[in-house]
Length: 219
Image 1: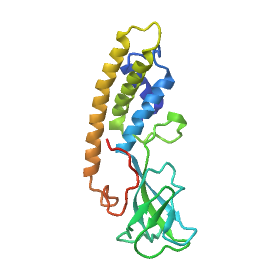
Image 2: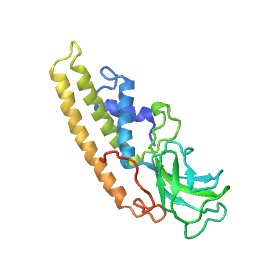
Image 3: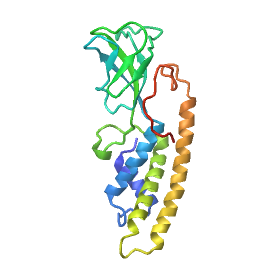
């Protein structure tokens, strides 16, 4: 897994700016961050947590799930040392800081709720992240592609009002950036289609237990 410095060098190489004569490292890092955000939207990390209830009731506090995007599945009751088989999947509705279990027994104090959820992908050192890079190795070039596109298009916008820059230069950056962005978006759509078609029997991608509450436009 590559860290930020390696990915930054690749973006700068694509921009023919390895010496940072045109783009600062901060501008490159911001562009990589935007590309990573888009990637996370179509292929977030999937992870697991055990939540021990401190109060009885159907509302399960999920505020401790760092960087939570979406709860995929809730398994209750769950015995840590001897998990039930088959799993006790529950229907639920997700809200900002809690999930409401809609069926089955009412959870009691001390019960463990096994939660499958998604969170953003990470690149070590990006925006101060200490987490290891989670982007799949085969998709790192995609982050480079998107990072270069964002960097070029942003520079084209800001260069319009800068003195000493040929009027053709921003046009070149914009055209180059748009072409790269089209490739980036097309690749994201293919990844999304692949992810949707995966049949994970443990954590179905399109389960019946989750009720969508966000309205973000899909890529």
